[in-house]
Length: 397
Ligand code: ADP
Image (tube, rainbow, N blue to C red; front, side, top):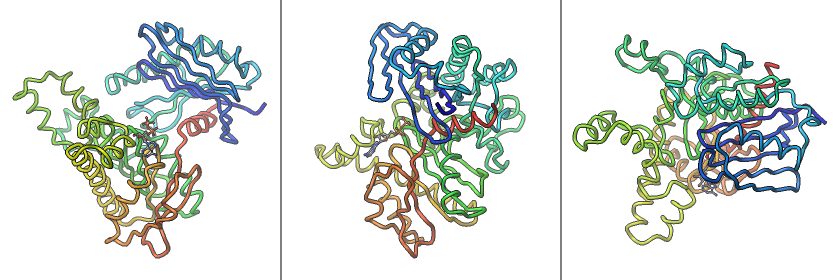
């Protein structure tokens, strides 16, 4: 059995896990636990040809994790034989403390806890995941891998908000970014493939959450998510960039509470707010075959989505003083052929030329979709956050 890493991604009511061989990238087993804390929880575990579903109450993460470990024993692969050398935990917020993965000890746990105010939905559940894994797998080192780490060294010009310094410092307000594990992984793959040094890259991670980053060489110089994942591109349910005065207006004029505005901007906006659906496939369906007004709304929403991406590409190209490669990744970036075509069509006047045939696929590996003569290359590189977490975890054990 090769060395493996158990990757754990704990959400507030969910838990994703994958047993992965970081050298080959092969996933040996994986699963998803949902509805922790609700009346009936659900676990889906997949190993080789076995697919197992369990529906039963999962009062807390500890119970869920215990059942998952039981599934490894009953369905496979048995953990004692899996040669696990680390448990890698995805942590959303590493604040100003972490610019890379960290072996979990008391100090690291304390800092993750301290950073909960910046990621109230994510850091606390990740800590629970760490504690449960420590209890159940006490012999195996736990490693924290931070979503923000890749952006921790952003230059001041993109990390700082033009906010009163005292307030910003007192409350740790700055651009932290997110999806850093994916941006790092994808940009490294591009550098590996193209072999260039100091490549100027834009990575577009377009999933349910969406973010863009500007990278020179192996260093991120800007990213669209801000102090929280709300800023930047239009997302499934988040607004992305919006005039912050809208927040004040909604409170003063519409009488909304802080929590109501939070819920509105994070969960009821973006593509869902504009079309009624946050899933890009559905939005495309509505744009093709909905009734007249639904079709018009969906088309408008897609235009807003594309326009925001194009704006960031322009801004980042100017910021970096040039552009070598744009890379699409994540659910929408990898699969939405029309979206890639629409974005690139807007860039044609700048000399970016797409190869329609090369674009007409949902690749499982890295491909170039621009054609000869394009001033910058355009690629699609499937992201693999679990593998990236496993690989990073290996670097500290
Ligand atoms: P996350 O990990 O942020 O939950 P993913 O990276 O899995 O999200 O991306 C989810 C998004 O990808 C959804 O909006 C989904 O509609 C979109 N997607 C998946 N396949 C396609 C496709 N064939 N065409 C367009 N969008 C797609």
